[in-house]
Image (cartoon, rainbow, N blue to C red; front, side):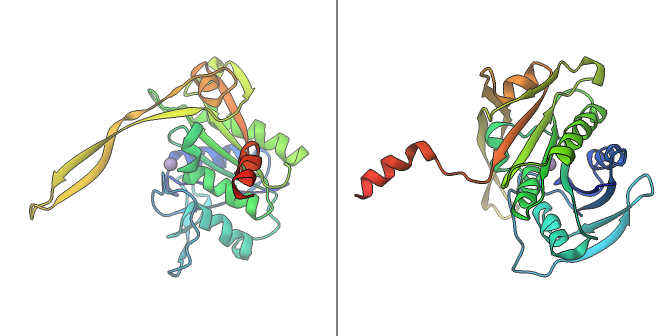
Length: 251
Ligand SMILES: [Mn+2]
């Protein structure tokens, strides 16, 4: 059986993590190593300025897990440094409670864990569930199993990860799977100013959930039409088409 490392950014007690771990046990030996608190929207971290503690805990179904006060990406980094039994054949991060579409991937702790996997030379998959009424974990878990199965068989190119987003629908209502590119998120953030008990102002980034520009072929469009979106991401963020222009500026 392949060895699958499962992590997330919502914390070790998240029902999405449990659903993912349980589903992936169909196809591999699962080690769960996840943060002890919510790291959503915390991006890609490497904790180097403080010690990291690791504890053994149990998931709600009684299965063993490891947890830490580090970030999701720290879980993967610690695993790569030998904190779990090696080798690891695949890292799957999620199931995130909210979607990670378009620019969201740059904020996401869920995606950051899969990026850390890519940096460690392991295939990584981030799995997220769209917003909406109820939580159709089973749909996202089934998508994770399907994609993980293929990745275990075929592998991924170097420095590449997959970003999977499932629609929040009953499994039987899913329209299918689409390979997509990242879409264009529109954030509706608002500055909320309040005063603390001593009258000193503080600020919150508030506002409505993000929307986006839906374009055929992108992740936002696929999920909004009931498809599971699978976006290949690359660690090389170079804007290759702009490289010649920058070169010309410097000549
Ligand atoms: Mn999250």
